[in-house]
Image (cartoon, rainbow, N blue to C red; front, side):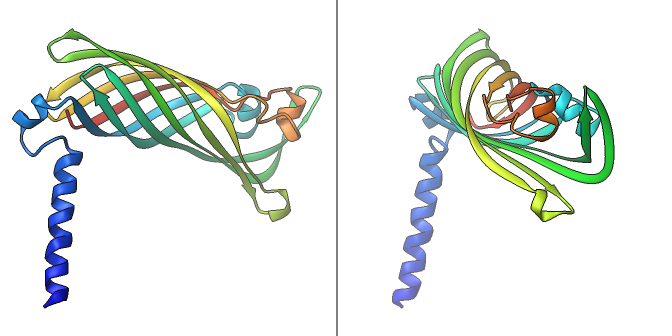
Length: 216
């Protein structure tokens, strides 16, 4: 009996939490609330600042990124958000000498995983169209994995980001955003391998992305 009561109380608590998280159970409640919580999914393309290093491994200076996050908007204009994205690609370990790249035929997988908190301001362009801009900082995870475990690398570095974009409301609960970001992660690379030969130290880059936003 007590277990059943506890289950009902837990279910009730989760329902209340979900209602508060979404800013109210009805559109009318959301409109009167000064706080909106939204979720977002992101997919885009990043061109890394260490372009020669990544091109030596993948024959390309960047690649697709994907992820998601949570955003809080205060009084329709000030926003705070946390995002996590991921780049992962497999290429070849290179040997670089005097600027010349020699692929070694050894598979090399590189993953870059930033977790970033940012804040900024939103403004209306039209009834269903808004612009926004902001800045923030976070932690960038980097890893290299190959067939030889002794050559694997993994670390995290602190960096910063500036962002801006537009968001079109296709529905009262769904928006589509087009966003540009620039990130800087100084002194993360350049300690060995191709990045040292090219003297490239920044793990950041420029990203163009599409965001699907759920919530008001």
